[in-house]
Length: 439
Image 1 (cartoon, helix red, strand yellow):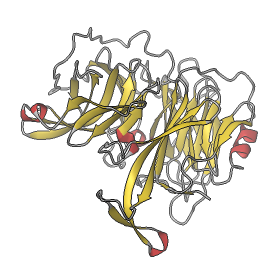
Image 2 (cartoon, helix red, strand yellow; image 1 turned 135 degrees about the vertical axis):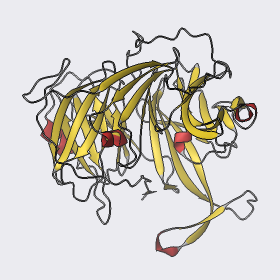
Image 3 (tube, helix red, strand yellow; image 1 turned 30 degrees about the vertical axis):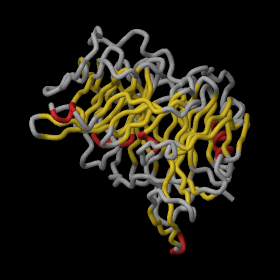
C-alpha cells in the first residue's frame, strides 16, 4: 500500500451569506437577479508605479489583450460532445478509493489520484487508463501534473532515508507513531505517455537542484527540459536526456546590488518553451517587494514588475493567471493575466476580496473560477472571463461543508462544467467530489 501525504496551506474561511441570483453575461445561460461583474484594468507590464524593467527586450507592448492569446491551454485537447449526467458522474467519482487529488488531462478527461492514478473520461464515465504510483517505497507529500507533447509529466516529493554509506546532508523527521528517520526530501519527475505508461523517472534533487517544493520547478511542454528556480541562486535549466545544467539567470549578484530581482519562488515555461515566467522578490529604494516577470531561456529579455500580493500562478502557452493564496484578511481581491511575449498584463478586480484566495484557472485559461462558503451549507462559485474581466456566471453548490476547507476546482471549458474536490480538515479524512454545470 502506497503511503501518501498531501501538504495544504490551512487558511481561515470566513462564513458569508450570499445572494444566489445573478444575471449572466457573455455567451453563458442567464438567470434572473442583479448583474455583477469584475473591474477590468489593462496595463503595460503591470503598470504600477515603481515597476522595474531590467534588461527588457524590444517587445511591442500592447494595452489590448493579444488576439491569439486564447488558443487553448493544454495541447491536443478535444471537447467532450456527449451529454453528461452530473449526478451519475459525481457518484462515480466518489467511488474511487482514497481519492484526494484531481488535475486536468485535456478535453473531457481529468486525472484522479486515489489508490492508483486514473485517467477518467467525464462524459463517458469510464476509466480510460490507470497506473500505479511511480514510487512504492516512498512517502508522497505533494504532487502536480502537466500535459506535455508526449503525454503527462508528474512532479512529486518523497522522503528518502539516509543510507549507511551516504555522506550528503540529511535531516531527521518524526513520522506518525513517533518514529524518527534520517534522510532528505527529493523532488522527483515521472514521465508518462498518453495511456499512463511510465517512460522515465528523474530525481531532480540528485542532479543538484537546490529546490524544496515542486512549485519551484516545471517541465517544458516538449518534455526535454526542467526549469528550477533555486532560492538565493537563480533560474536554471536541466536537460532531461543529458542531465546537463544550464544557468539562465542569477539572482545573487548584479541584480540585487542595483536594486532588482533578488530571488525567485515559482517558475514555468511559456511561449513554446522559449521564455520562463516567474514569481519572486525584488529590492527597490531600500525595500523588498513581491514581483513577477519573465526571461528568455537564453537569459535575455528580462522583465521584472513589482507586485505586493500574487503568489500563485496557472500557466498556459501564451499567458499566465496570477492569483493569491492568502488569509481572507490579507487578500487583495485581484487576479492578473500576464502575457510575457508582449510584456502586458490585465488585472481583474473581484467582487469580494476573499475570492482571490481561492481562484482556479480553467483548463484552457479563458476563465477562472472562485469559491466562497455559504454559512456551512455549500459554496457560491463565480466564473470570470479573463478576456473581458467580467463575472459571467454564478452557481450555488449545496453541500454540508462544516468539516471541509475550500474546494480544489477544475473547470472544463468545453463542458462548461466544474469538478470540485472538497478538502477535509480536523478529524475528517474524507475527500468528496462534486459536479457543477454552468450551461
